[in-house]
Length: 362
Image (cartoon, rainbow, N blue to C red):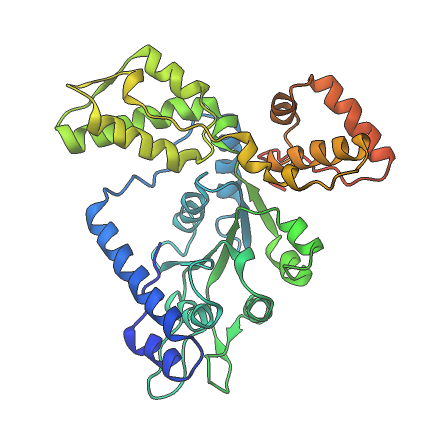
């Protein structure tokens, strides 16, 4: 993703006291780190590669909405390929010959992010990403990480198609389609007051929910073969082969890091394998422990009734698995039928039960 910003614009923020010296230093260090990684790390293909029926449906929806000049919200776990989907929407539209500019909303302090998006007025003026993307598309990656004040300005950009540079006193018309991504439950963020409801509804015109890789086993196979060929040709000059036990090992893994993790695992396996045959022992998989996600259990107050503890435990497990009943039942060590009976009891008692993600467009 691109976070490029001129030194003059960053210096302007620093001199105006909008960012601290530590934030300024962190920004420059992060920028240098990204530049080093860009030179050292092989770039993975950004093709929309899939075999799963859920992804086929998403591709069909992309064809339908590509030329509609409306916002798109893409949700899904980290590493599922949300930016790839955003780029495909852009490439399928009439804007494909104009800029596609991505901004990671979680990577910058609020003041710097505002300048990055809207630009800076004055003699040291700098165009923001919305202006730079004229005629094209702006991707707001992890939009739920923005603060409330900036959310109000994003709402104006969406509703009025105009922005105002930082320090400026006049509106600037923009022509950019806005696509936003999030790995959070955005509806929950609205309910908790962390995300503006009006901005949520403005972004929610088209919603694409990308299923986790563990829920698309066919994609594990096709992506594995794609990455294997790409990296083996790149590093060893010819396509490598994959043993049957190696593929089975990959299919049994739950992929908490999704496609991004799969890419890294294949890359490492190709580099570490002997010869041109990749086997199961070449794959180092670090299964995430469930208790790391359920740290909250250790802090339950002593004296709480068992029934209340059980209710909290089951509901938190459902949240951890994004409402997926099958995965939650497995984690809890109970049958799916038992879990469903518990959920029915919770609903009757008035508890809010996390709903499962479906991978379908809403």
